[in-house]
Image 1 (tube, one colour):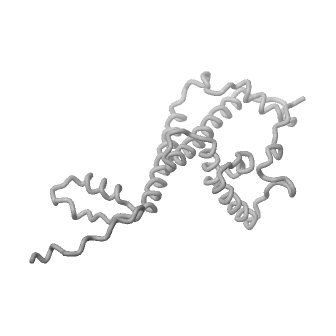
Image 2 (spheres, rainbow, N blue to C red; image 1 turned 45 degrees about the horizontal axis):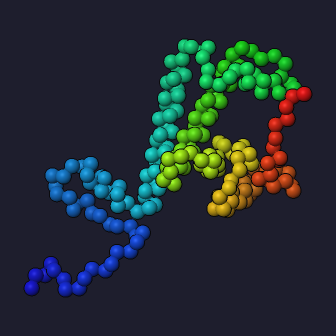
Image 3 (cartoon, rainbow, N blue to C red; image 1 turned 120 degrees about the vertical axis):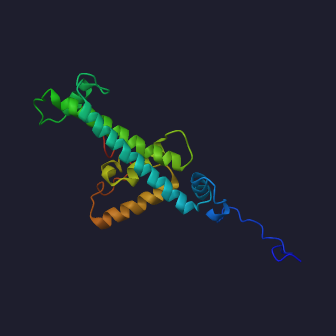
Amino acid sequence: MDPTKSSTPPPPPVMGAPVAYPPAAYPPGAAPGAVAYAQQLYAPPAAAAAQQAAAAQQQLQMFWTEQYREIEATTDFKNHNLPLARIKKIMKADEDVRMIAAEAPVVFARACEMFILELTHRGWAHAEENKRRTLQKSDIAAAVARTEVFDFLVDIVPRDDAKDVDAAAAAAAAAAAAGIPRPAAGVPATDPLAYYYVPQQ
């Protein structure tokens, strides 16, 4: 009888369980990319999530590097993606603002463009984590909730998902413990009238 063969059948596979796939299973002459690909395919879910997070972080780093290069190379300040008149009107909504230099709306236009692009990148990373190719409002809300820099938008961007409500409650409790101010007492954070824009009269 051959000692490598067993008379008992192997146990049935368990759905969702991580599969250990030794890289030594490939012959010594196999391409290194094939081994890495096999490890990526059979990585446990926590490792896959960490890989996605690392890839998203790398994309953001590349995004900001490219933005910096683009700013350094900019020579044409006359063409803008956002309307300068609208930006100037928003700036003049503040009663204390009397005069606005010509360069200020240009700088704000570029800053707004970069803000929108970064929020889109972070939202897209969330959409890819959920295996979707369409950016949704919930992706933007998740990007706002995950990024500390965007904390000023937490009460403005609504969260619809039930699981997101639990995460928002945990974040609110952590923020309260850290002493971060929230909306006034009696005003729910999801109240659409809690923050609103009053047009200049």
